[in-house]
Length: 127
Image (tube, rainbow, N blue to C red; front, side, top):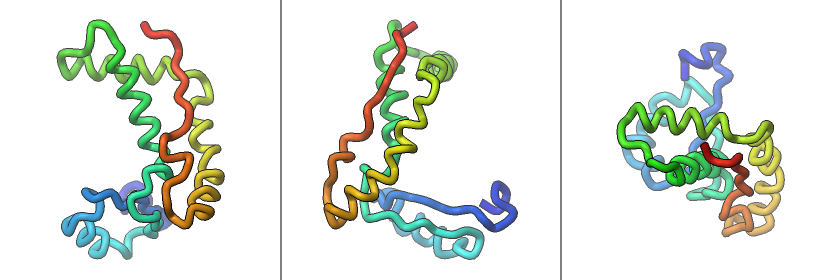
């Protein structure tokens, strides 16, 4: 964090998933908390983490490839090709959904929301 945000304006965000809330991770956050602002998310709230939606889109895109990637280099190529296949503005959809996700989460008082299943995923035709 100090390398990427040497100005001290970095924010650390994590979704409180079980691995992220482990003793080791919690201790690290406490020890380094002076280096960044910690953005608190509701506990285990996958509907608030747009990265999960993007990761799922990548996995789906790679899994549908024929033949499937068999080596690390094949996987890298498949990921790069998948990235290029996303339509222009693809990332804007999940980013723009953040305010609606927060509103839904507040209305649900931290419970499940309609965003639990993520935002729509769009793909170009496969290569």
